[in-house]
Each structure stands twice: as C-alpha cells, then as structure tokens.
Length: 242
Image (cartoon, rainbow, N blue to C red; front, top):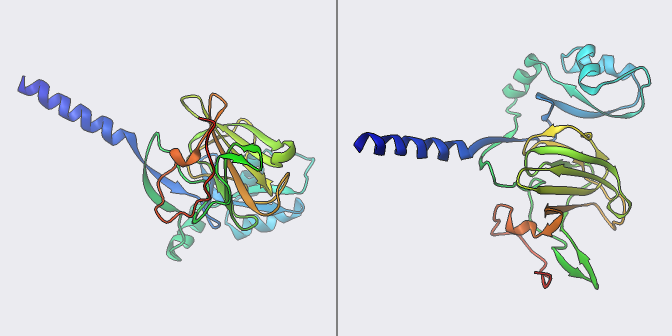
C-alpha cells in the first residue's frame, strides 16, 4: 500500500509539473519563427539580404530557406535568423526575451504592457462586438495567446488584416486590424510568438488590436480566459447574450 501511495504521489507531481511550461515572449529585438530566433524585417529588395546576412552573422541561404524566397522577390516582411554568435552579443548587452511560467491550458495576453481596454465583448451602439479591443501603438508585436495552427492570414473586410489560430479543445483566436501579418496559413506557432504587427486596417478608427477568443466559433469573453490584471482599466458593457 505504501509503495502504491508513493507511486501516486510521484505521478501527481509529474502531471502537475508537466502542466506548467516555460514561455518565452517575443519582443521588438528577438523573435521566433520555425524554431529559429531572429527578427522580422521589411526588405525592399533582394540586394538587401546580403547586407542583412552580414549584420546578423547569418547566411544568405538560411534567409532564403526559412522564408521560402524564390526568384520572384517582392517587397515584404522576411524573417532574418540570428547566428549563435549574434545571440551571444545580444546576451552580453542584456537583450533577451521575457521568460515566464505558464500553465499549458492558460491563454496569455496578445500584447505586452496591457493597461486598459477600449471596448469589451457585448453590445456596442446596438451591434454585437465579439471581442476585446486593446490600444497599442503602430507596428508593435502582436503575440499568439496560445500555441496552435495558423488557419487564416490575410485580409477580411471590416477586420482588415487578420490572423486566425486554431488551438486545442475547439478554441480559436483572432487578431485583427494588423498593419502586417507575419505568419502564413499552415504555420505552427508557440504561445508568446510574434504573429503580426499592430495597425488600423479595416473598420478601425485608430491603432489597436481587436482580439477574439472563440469556442466552436462561439464568441467567448477573453477576460474570462486571460490572466487577471488587477490594474486593468475596463470599459464595461452589458453581456446579455449569455
């Protein structure tokens, strides 16, 4: 009996430990994509790739490979992977990603330094608003709130540029009004990974992130799932749809 009890204690400890994970949040200096660390940069021409490879101590072939660049080069955002030597240089300058402990099933805030909302889920001016609006300056990192599969990355009417991620347990998240989408349909992203840059595309009156969290395509209140922020300034609306 004592042996069984000990085994159960070890098993419960293992499962509890496994439920928590170390999450690294991307920032403006260090970002992740396809298992590499680097940075998304808007590149004007193919000639710029040579100078970027020298600056970040990486190879041109690695840049072309991770971005699937072919002969038909177009002006766009491309991911520039950093070499180990360049990452060491950043480490010496105390430049690194933020590290936190997060439970596997827990969603995270999709932007850094959240201090208020400009609109929450509910009826607004007689129309149903299916998400959470978070003010943010232009062209700042938008982060995946949970690991998952990119099922849409493009332009969608009033949403403007939008990224949609499919998660476990029938959950999806939407990130709208982006200045630029960085990930592509079919990409698998981690929690805290940059997926877009903030903007005001579509039906928007200023730079902000419209964030939706859905279960089986039913809009849920993101504030019921995101980590609590006691100092968050919230604009309340009547959630009489429940």
